[in-house]
Image 1 (cartoon, helix red, strand yellow):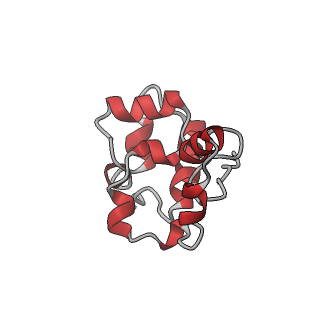
Image 2 (cartoon, one colour):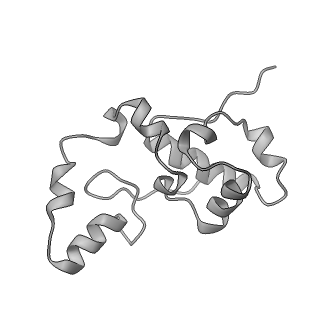
Image 3 (cartoon, one colour):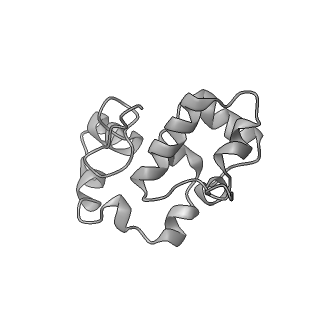
Length: 117
């Protein structure tokens, strides 16, 4: 299982230990974004807002994100409606991609649909 780095602002980190916004702020000398969100952890975001976020916010590898995009999955809300079995039917999504997806969703307190038995 991979460990997902989380930026100081609470978003998934993509540039070492910083998210894209904080990385851009650090380069420009501004640090406003990182401190605006410190009081509002990701898990406390309203579910409606989280489900409307693009899958890019999950911090997935480009290959995995592109596969989801090609399957018509653009938002986190689209993704959580899928089961692991449905995603594994795609020839480009394997067990490690599912682990990455689950790790990304876990940051937001979400998971893929459970398969009915």
